[in-house]
Length: 408
Image 1 (tube, helix red, strand yellow):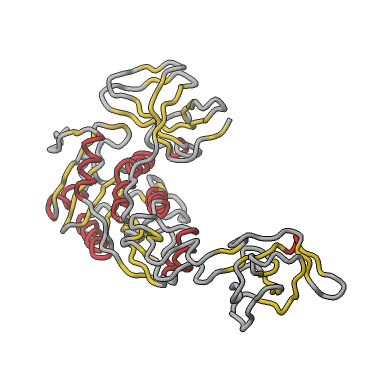
Image 2 (cartoon, rainbow, N blue to C red; image 1 turned 135 degrees about the horizontal axis):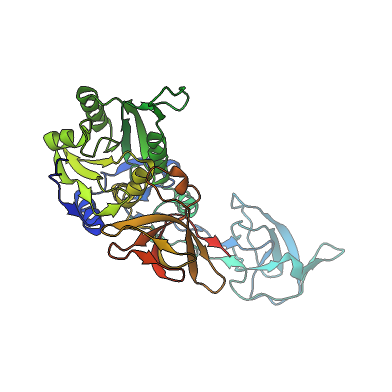
């Protein structure tokens, strides 16, 4: 077998190289309501106070707090949305609803539950208010010039509501990375096509496009490409012209038909071509005309695990996120595990959080790189050190949480 020209590097080194080569995409301006899930690229400050006027915090009666008389004459009603010409003086009250502006002269609101209308229409106040009772002052929620949403925040429901509240109709955000995805291999057919001898259905392209969406990117489907140099080159060029990231599966080992690495070496810079990891040893990362290109192995599990370790953090960084890595937990093995030494291994597992706060883990069965079933239901990747072969039940291992842990 020919020897690979690419040195085998550690997983940590590979991740560091990837992150050193990608930077956030240039910000774009979008309508605020279309920015959900995107990272804000510039601070947003309030140009107005909220509330912009003294407002009732409850349903009740607006009064002058210095007036201690128990009976008041109701002179009108103040509803939300406008400010009438009412003016409250001693011995007077105005019926008011929550959120309505306080009428002139009033400085407190008595809750309706603490009042009683008399047969002659006068208002009996059972609990005399203090100044400011049940009144939301100007700027209580947000002051003029206050920082409302800082840059770097991923915009969710609360942030979108705040933008609306301060009248910020356009925002600067980092766009979703566009990721061109293709699979290579003469043996591949589409999911709905009957299989002929020697063929398999293309699953990698669809799982990788889904993983791109889950990481906040926008996949571009380049289809599956036969093992022909000209076809592979044309597809990769098309992807590089349309997307911010190129993502391939298959064609990165040392076989006669492995055409991805030669193209990347000829047209770009290969930053690494092998990683001391299982699965995913031949995973390759390059830049072509400044565009990151990730070449995943052809085995389905290798492709998905490699995406999780190398591609997902890169997509998050491109999209402006600063928290790039999944959470990690120390877990207790529920059964014995062994693996072949020499490479760090990521075994698919189910992690459970127990009532006492500790975590335990069991693998999802046979861990072959072609067994996509080992990914189904997995919420973690167990990190097995390269220099240890056996891990008996009760051992402590590190787990990368790729989903929420199960609860006991």
